[in-house]
Length: 255
Image (cartoon, rainbow, N blue to C red):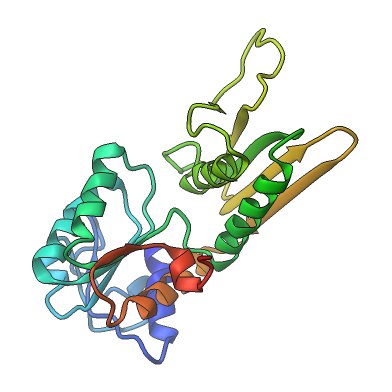
């Protein structure tokens, strides 16, 4: 994802790469940030957030929760706006993000894809119309290296549908089925997870009724879509007041 972001920034006429971060001990440290892409950016990869943010106006973060929260502290200290595409935060982590947004403008979304966020809007409408008389299942698939499950996008899809359908979230979620489970509980929302190969990200929400099924699906074939969405988020944040925004704000999808 880092390589995709660097490539997208290099191709964008209104953007300039000002810093690049990697974990301590990474073999990339000290290298030019564009080396893996055959690009010469003049920006070395560093491990210290303060150093990377010295000449930066925005930070785009796709890491893991503990790294994101450390970078978040550095952004608040430096007054740098932030785009967070990391998933897997616990309740405390979400509170820390909300608190930071009182000091800096911040876009936080479980999925930066433009298409996924349009799908979330469609799911809101479908949940309202199909919330009664239809069973709801969320199915997602990702590459073998993904460490959290279900994906942040799948969780967001479940939440959007549950709230639109008037169901309890996350109380009505069913995370796993094994053995003699009995009949499906009325109003439940099931989740199924696939991990394998190099799948970038597939998500389907299935509404199963009597005599008919409705499926709303999004499939990613490249991480470039997340990079392009992140740059749209950066452009949205330019000149914004502190606050917690999401991709629906960025794309003008809020009612």
